[in-house]
Each structure stands twice: as C-alpha cells, then as structure tokens.
Image (cartoon, rainbow, N blue to C red; front, side):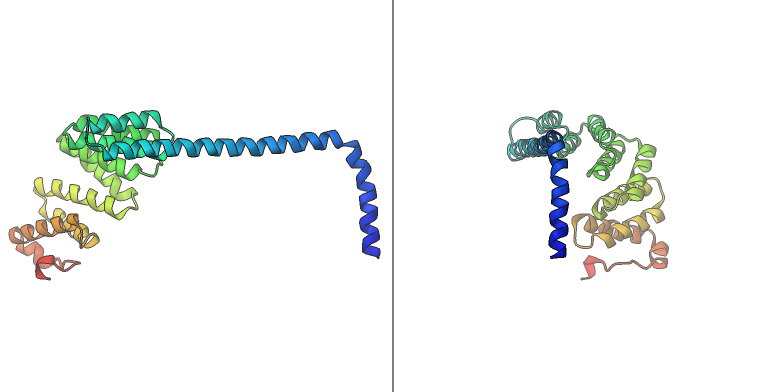
Length: 227
C-alpha cells in the first residue's frame, strides 16, 4: 500500500507540471519525430544512391560494348559518395592500365587516394600508382610506392603483388639476392595462386643463376615442381 500511495502522490505532483509545460512537451515530441523522420529519409536516400550506383556498375561490368574506362569513370563521377562509385573509379583506372594508358591510370588511382585517403580500397589504389609508375619506367618512384604498400597494407594479396613488383625491379637492377627473398615471401604467402606460381618459377631461375645464394637460404615453402 505504501508503494502505491507513493506512486499516486508522485503522479499527483507530476500532473500540474505536465499541464503547465504541455506546449513545450508537444513541441519536443514533434521535434523528436521530425528528427527521426529526417534520419530515416537520409538513410533511405543513401541506400537508394548505393543501389543505383551498384546497378550502373553491374551493367557496365557485364557489357562488352564501348570503352570500359570511360563508362566506369562516368559512374564514378555520377556517384562519388557511394562505395560502388569508388569501385568504379578503381575499375576505370585499372581499365586504363590494361589499355596501356599508364599516365592516365596513375592519375585516376591517385585521384582515389586524394579523395579517399583512408578508403576501403586505398591499398589497391596505392598499388595501382606503383604499377603505373613501374610501367612508365619511373623505377625510383615505383620502388617507393611499392614499399609504401608493403609497409601500410594489411591485405596479403596486395602486399604480395607489391613484393612481386619490387622483386622484379631488384632483379632487373642486378640485386638478385634481394629479389630472391621477396620472391620467397610471395611464394610462401600465395602457395596455390598464380602469383605464387610465378614467384616459384622466378626462384627456380634465380637458384640456377645463384647456387650459393640458394643453398644458403632455405626456402620457407615447398617448390610446386617437387610435389
């Protein structure tokens, strides 16, 4: 009974305050409803943009007509604030690279990094910059870019690709021992993939050229040719 009386007394004291502040309470409730509606509307708009960008990206990906790079970059320009738009920018840069337009590809990869420095695909974009520099013969800049990927990315596949590119440069510049170590890392990280297989082949070639180096460094992986 005492608890019930206390509750009744509290309600009797609260009701006059509610009556006095009724307009304020109604206004606050309206503001809260409006805020919820705005948040919901913005979320719906963002979702709609993501869906539209994703559909456009899929359509380009399954189409074989026209220059793919231009189509991808158009999507990136139309949907810059969506994940699909970011992917389209990278796809456009990759298409330019595949077409041998390395300077243009580098510019688009760098554009992604400038606009999304902490983006989901920043490691892939940095690798793209490095590969574009490498393809242009800007070896010193490519080495630095590959090294940034190795030091900063947590994606094993991206790091392996950067190490493979760096190993090729080391080998071409007469540093086979450094190349040997990098190829070992790639083959160990990707034992059943195409990049790991290519690294294995490079290691076999280097072992034939550098028997001393090969015998002094025990590979951290079994050669596929011996399986």
